[in-house]
Image 1 (cartoon, rainbow, N blue to C red):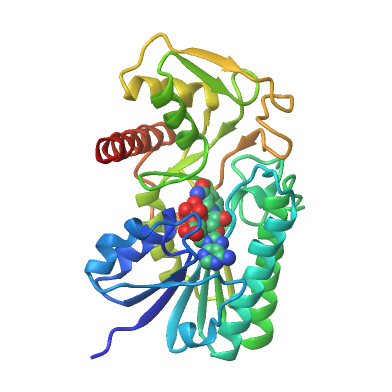
Image 2: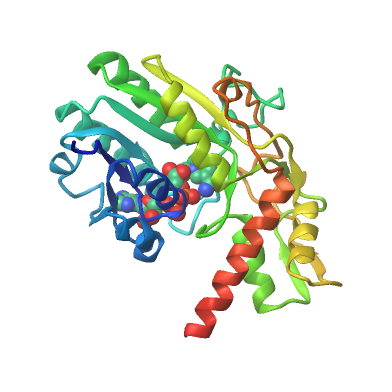
Amino acid sequence: MARPKVVITGGAGFIGSHIADALVARTEVVAVDHLKAGKRANLEDAMKAGAVLRKLDILRGDLRPIVRGAEVVYHLAANPDVRLGRDGTKPLIDENVLGTFRVLEACRQEKVPKIVFTSTSTVYGEASVVPTPEDYAPLEPISVYGATKLADEALLSAYAHTFGAQAVIFRLANVVGGRSGHGVVVDFVRKLSRDPKELEILGSEPGTAKSYVHIEDVVAAIEAGTRAADEPVSVFNVGSEDAITVRSLADAICDELGLSGVEYRWTGGAGNGRGWAGDVRAMQLAIERLRATGWRPRKSSEAAVRDAARSLWSALQMSRTKA
Ligand SMILES: NC(=O)c1ccc[n+]([C@@H]2O[C@H](COP(=O)([O-])OP(=O)(O)OC[C@H]3O[C@@H](n4cnc5c(N)ncnc54)[C@H](O)[C@@H]3O)[C@@H](O)[C@H]2O)c1
């Protein structure tokens, strides 16, 4: 019997490639990625097991033949940077809002029954309730990234109710693990590999306090939530059970890498511990809704960060040996 087809946009990226690894044994996986941030190497194992990579920009390419016949489209392709880059707001609007619109249009035309979307904790902004539940209001993002993801959620809801596909939305805390190419853990590991004596940290001591969740917990969460979802639109928070400050995160990474006496150089950032404008000060998500499906995170924030630092460090050492 033919295996069900799934499409993963952003499939050569950090989270997308781990989803491909998890699904390839029981589904026909088609990964779509323009390979600007994603890497073919991330999909090496999945491709050996039968996954196919289509190099394509979701903003330009013809998506209809790719999503045709898919039971589920996992839409992950996006600009994942919460911090505004040199090019300002336009790349975020284009890649996140217009990109999602194009994926949804292709899914509508090809009658794809289910769309899974990776949203973010940043849709909550500076929530007054922490841990923050899915029904918290008002949703008031403080970053353009968070705003684009909230706009995407609104589009998914409208498409689900108007055209009948099911939308499953995951609001992810900070995801960490091997193959990650962005975020604070990657930043610290890269800096420490260049200079193991000093670490520049954006913000002021002790920095923000946020929840970090390990990629293995996220993949299991996405599988559990997607299976359990039975509404036209389902929203699930995905995070660990605690939060840590940037200071504790730096201590854990230095300890994990066997570095002692590292001098921290705080930049001052955007005030109140924030690393930059749009950086949320305190983030932890209420995860009872997803726990009700039987899922639970296996790693705390610190354990997730330690494991991620180890994986990223050894990948960095390996790429240096090869170069
Ligand atoms: N990593 C996190 O902490 C985190 C937290 C919350 C939400 N998310 C969301 O999860 C998703 C995956 O994030 P990630 O951390 O794996 O990032 P990533 O950069 O590793 O993956 C994104 C992938 O999408 C691809 N891509 C981007 N724009 C594209 C386009 N126009 N056409 C084709 N491919 C394109 C990139 O090449 C990359 O491979 C994103 O939607 C992100 O917003 C991530």
